[in-house]
Length: 596
Image (tube, rainbow, N blue to C red; front, side, top):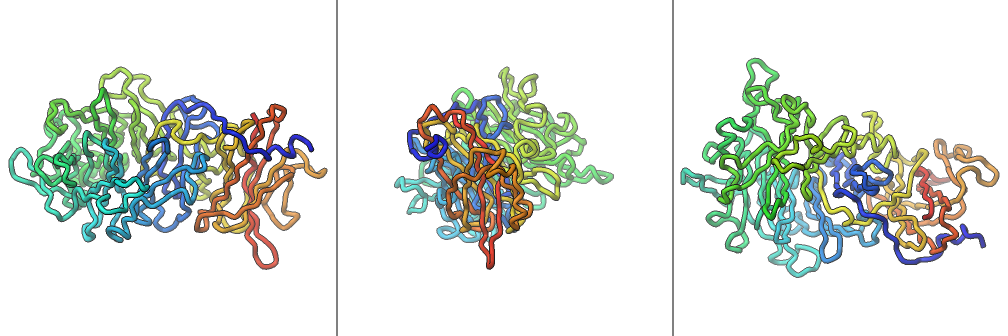
């Protein structure tokens, strides 16, 4: 028996590869209904190398609600287990996912309902643009919004008190602040003001509670400010004196609330939006700081906020014509009075606006903090990820060397990555003519928290699909090293409950005397190409649901044999749609790895 015949016969211990050098970033790609994970496998500070972008999770239910899906994801270590949480507006729930098979992604079946909000609380609860964050006490806070006609609108805290993996039991949800319950805050005037609970769109941890932004459109009675919530007496709400405060008010939208003194005086840029497209200009609303995150600096929580205004919208300028897009502010409670309303407590961290910031950030679509860095997602020609860091400790990231954006297009952008590596994880958009991901937010976690996608795996060639317009996609995770049982390949973006065959070979030049690649059109499969000598196959059925939610997974254990180091292995997945009188074929690109 030759050495290549039994390469995948043994199951031995795993081998690891080096940890990434910067944080892992989760990109919430709503156009393709997925979370993309970016991992700096080769340690170059970017995410452009092979397999550094992977599909972390997709439930395959892309449809009419796709522009409103999966707007927040958070992840952490829980007693040695890597866990992610996310909100899904399609099913009105908070999900929990783990990587049980250690392949670096959350497969269908590895997610569970952490809180089935639709069943347990309110089927009409609205998670569109909802917030989700860990608090410093380990609890999970989330916000629902937009629908004041439904009772479950506000800010909530979840705790898995009995450690059963969910927050579905009695007492595990606390309604911290709900619309219609009369929650008030008391400004310096001494007159209580009702807190607008309809439009909390983002949350971030802060001290023993959270800070959240409220305000989406100037057409509604919204406060357009940051509130802090902290349950000081541990009674399960933030209704008591001092528990709900205006943390920072840049807008003055609600005249009953105190405004940050530097925004009010003009020391900081006026955030009232004026439509400059008409003459004379007219007041059109207020700038929205819908992205909030927290960095712990020297043991103290510092809140960062970012504008989501566009450079070309009627919310993009103030009355003086100054750009409101691309602004990031740093908020620090210097006098420890529980807010960032006083002079000098809010400073401009980064200016990416159209008028004074070279329009570096025409529109921000996400922000997350990690370590001493702020990661942002500017929307340029496609979704991108940049990193900002205050290296000289002067309170901003606007000095030379403090912006990390690769060659200028970002540490990752969907189109550049797709041009180099093909349709995974972002498929080519034929209408737009590029690889495009419509991003609604980004998340962040420690590098090395999840298993590493395979650095030694590359794709080439072109896939096909005769059963529909979407091509099946091949990926792999783990290192293809001798002695490992953790090298895994996967097919995704395929129909569920369909036969899937992983084909494997050791030659990409010829097969049975025929030159490769081989056009399968002669067998009735036009446009489909076999790229390797089909030597062995592994048959399964895709799991999941829906026309694009099918996933097939195959572990390829590699024997601990030094003699097979350097052997090239070629794999392709085939999807078979059995129909009367024949079958419709789908093939992935060719995947290639070299045994290490």
